[in-house]
Length: 228
Image (tube, rainbow, N blue to C red; front, side, top):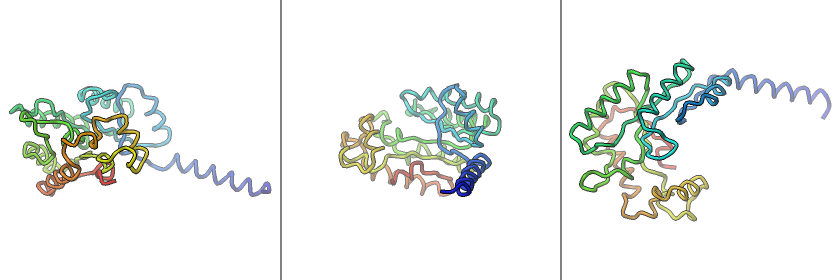
């Protein structure tokens, strides 16, 4: 390689890096769960918009939902215009007659404070049971007022409903290492080990039934809509 070709290649690399910094970019699915701002500063330097997703996850490192929301609100003040967030709701007190009202009140508070969408997680369908011991699926009629409210107000719903089909296979038959590693470390969600839990088809059908009931709902199926 002569000196002129080295110069051309060098200029091309510099050009690509400069363009990377200039282009507006969005990371549409991250989880900001603590007060540290190093990641946000780095994202700001390279021109990223961020969408942080709150989730009803019961284990570390996820703090309680109210704390997740307050962390995001604090970061939004420090990085105005750069950070949006997706709220969610708790499944606690599901059997209470006040659950729907309390959930709508919490969501309305979230939207008044800048939330742009709502997330539902796999605990619906794969974990939470009602007072009769039945798994609560996403097409349960009790969710209808929530999804009607979102439809009426043009608010998107993000759905991590179920898991990939690998979840119902032995680890050694799973098709990707990411799933193998995850389900080794989270056997509580490895449905192959829990045949008494709902099937993949039951969970996906419940999602599809929910969407049929709410045709105007903007729905974003996370993780390739659990069809990966």
